[in-house]
Length: 119
Image 1 (cartoon, one colour):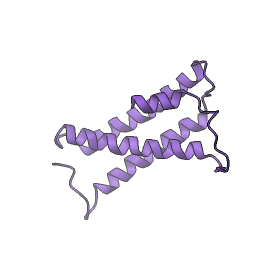
Image 2 (cartoon, one colour):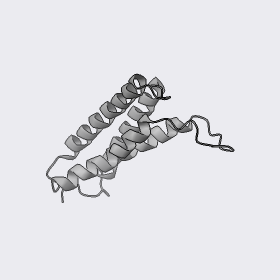
Image 3 (spheres, rainbow, N blue to C red):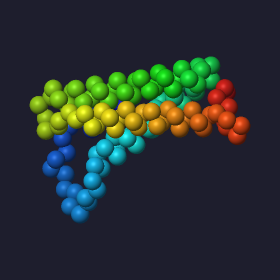
Image 4 (cartoon, helix red, strand yellow):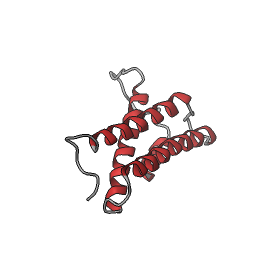
């Protein structure tokens, strides 16, 4: 997470991206990153507690962590004197990605053909 935090706070405006023109690519990256933060974080909590943490609790902890982390990063981008700017749409993409990650993992461990959460 330290590496991601550093990448989030520094500007890469001088990086040459000629030929690559995907509208709202940064929002897609935000969304996908936060899906993985919640999924991997929840699985980490599951492994760390040897399956003793309830699935709903792990998902809630990681969902809240990811949303709060995304907001803090945007505040830092707003406060720091680099060429980064805070955007509401980044926070929205982060939050949506977090919810999709939590819902996807919940679905993966629920239902008749699901994996067991307990180890």
